[in-house]
Image 1 (cartoon, chains in turn purple, cyan):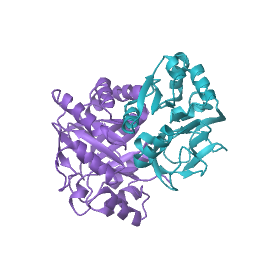
Image 2 (image 1 turned 180 degrees about the vertical axis):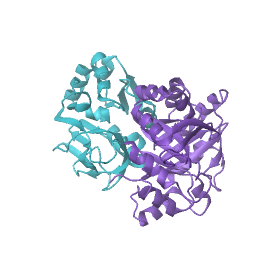
Image 3 (image 1 turned 120 degrees about the horizontal axis):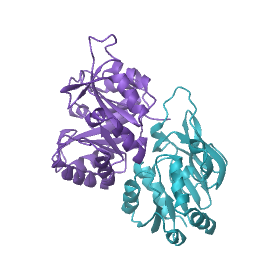
Image 4 (image 1 turned 90 degrees about the vertical axis):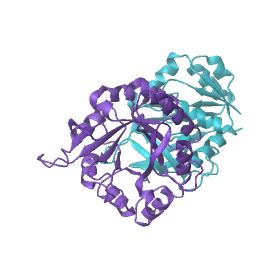
Length: 259
Length: 200
């Protein structure tokens, strides 16, 4: 039976993990390679590394980070942040990523999705969407506004139509972050996640708002998510992806265990 | 352990090469020089992407050498599209022929309201006679990402269920294929690749 994926996310700046899931007993708590390996050992089904530097000068550092992180990682590994062209993506793949995540650059030029998909296959392209419900829209959820530049600027797109276009252009997965829920620890936006998941045939990864195990149960059931990003959840009481998955299994969610 | 990996430009070889290197394999990568296939101790055909990409194997003139290597008994492992290529063909690109080591053809998952592609970790039901999957216990998980699949037949070495049961692995003598990505499947995947590298 297909399982729901728990994905560990590391935010990286200038080659160091600045947010995301850290461990107190690790020697170098800021080293992405050490943290990614630790997450994989402790049951994460996949690792996402988001480069929040995303500057031109930062590219070489990022590629070095990707190379070191990928070396001993034998679960799927996605990299996002600052990928603006198919050539950027190619460098990240050559450094050892299995998937790239594109966001603002794909909104600016949607053919980027086609270009990466053509060369590396749809399975290698994640389109990340940051969306906020639009109370003025006739359907505030399906017509949630898409934002770029880390949520600072509206992109002029609606979440469901953009997700469908991304799929049609060859995206393999959607990483959907609810800006309303992000940082609240009050739970994922299950309505938003379900609206997107039902509108596309590709997997949807839910992100934003996790604060308790019950929130994951909810986003997999009500939100129809195929995977969920677990970042801050590890900061309050859940020690590892494995223990989260054990709790999920007890709640009747199909997860990869033992892992 | 020397292993020859066929690069037919279908996606990204880095992951497969890195994992084989981790297991201590000495790597040879071939994209057009068929003499490297002739001298291979064992062969891996990786692949993600579209069945039509296998046309490059034809264009590069590698098909006769691969066929001959298999006949000589060289252990051969196809991964994902590399496995599908071992069949007669695939409805994904019906004008392209497979190697027809296995007579069935690959087809798309039926549309029954479930998501296609099948992406994620799913469990294996392993046939006890499989050498490639030796030591893989019931219900161990591996990572899949695909929309087309091979049917269950007598040569199927492991079955996975998604929408319907399909061949997660195939094995007949020295010819083996896996629909999943062993290089992305954690400890289970490493065990399977090690079995292949030690296959005699």
